[in-house]
Length: 412
Image (cartoon, rainbow, N blue to C red; front, side, top):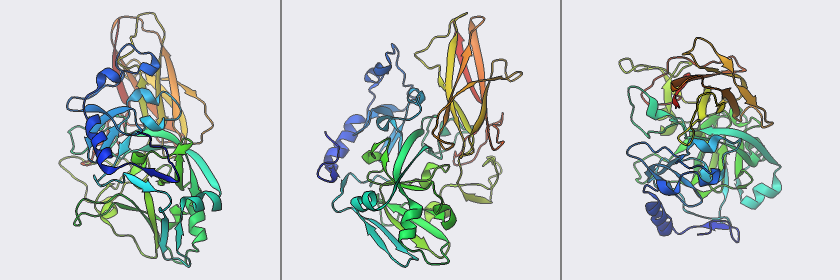
């Protein structure tokens, strides 16, 4: 089925869309073994109780849920600077997601504490405003939730609820300036085309402080890696908030509201809250009473190779691979330990010109000296001075995992 825009529209019959979701929601491991990479073994590790699915405009991804869609990227796709659209993870909160958008009728409405309310078509956005692009990591707040101990409820993501893309669109600042915001503006809220299944359930709405919303890097994006956004990644518009968790990156953005008072809404006041400390840390027997909305990305580093297709052999050099990122200060260094943390050696950072909101890929050459189990430790240091702890943080929502990562392999 062709999902490319035709005659200014992108349409997919809802019944057909849901039927395709159902057909895709089963294990298809035999067709998802990295054929493009020439691997002889399957590259996608599917945890017990989960499966693989192929949604419209997507390759096979790890299926957490189909209604609403939650799809995880396999780690092998992160061995490149930019994550392909068809392999980019998907996260929605409600089943009532848009499955049909006619661009002839679509409007982005900007209202509230303004001198001039706006209703902008896609043509208006592309013709009347200067385009802006940047590369930025998008990471779900609950990425790596599966590894929290003790276990917490929620989508049991491994490490694949993230991606790195080039986002192109209009600066939010330019839109707000065109709307002539009145003095005293405090908050800007954002809502999309998705709807809650019941009237009693709160619509998904997020907000930013007005000063934050006016920063140059905040975009209303209509392209992802040079193409229109996939439907399940937020077509036709998505808010881009570099350095902040994905909960703020509102999909299918259709309404922006400026207010002179503090925004009040479930998805800011009740949901996506973290303990009010630098590590977002609490304990099961002492749940934090002082909480704040989740906000900036913390420092992360991950292994993306070796995986199930790789074999480490005695006396043969092997390149470990991975990535690291933070909220925008940039990565200073990445280090590997092969002796349990007694000694650390620098990994080679692979340079790019994408800016500090992008991740940095790294490689580390290792030659095994003997067969048996080999354990690697991985840590990163940000230019801000932030480091990764040896002990993982914990909170009841499974947000913002951060720890010196460990990987054990068998050398033959």
